[in-house]
Amino acid sequence: ADLVEAQKTRRVLDRLAGFTVSPVLWKLVAPGLSAGRVQSVGLAMVVERRRLRFASSEYWGATAQLRAAAGARDAVGAEFTAELSAIRGRRIAGGGDFDPDTGRLLSERAAEGTRHLTEESCDELLAELCGRAGCERRRDPP
Image (cartoon, rainbow, N blue to C red; front, side, top):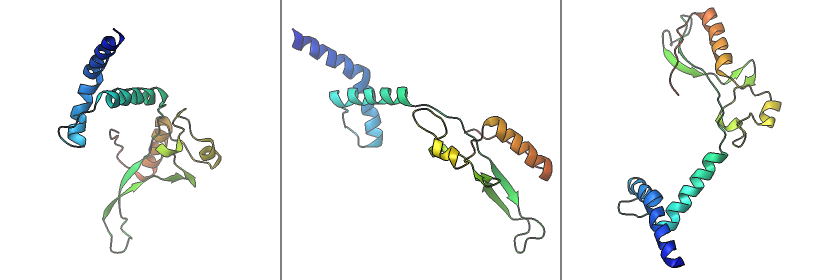
């Protein structure tokens, strides 16, 4: 009786998890592959545990579309893109600077003086820069 119940349970798990994983395998690896009972349920459990552990963190950056100044030799009017990497010598935090378990800036990065830009501080910085140089502010989706 226990073996019959175990078989029924496996069949339900196949329908819940396995049948949804196989099409992903067909697209990413090779057509016709089956996720299998143990693998698909195990994969679903690992993904769910990762989702529970992951702590998100918000950080911002700035990119500018610039034009060479009139005094620049051989580049008058040339446009280029620049990404903000530091402010007054302090590096701007990126995704790898945050603890995946807590979502906070790593203590060693904070000790190095790495700057965590929030939406508010990024807006203030851009307002200051645009006020000096005259520019167009535009938000791009992430």
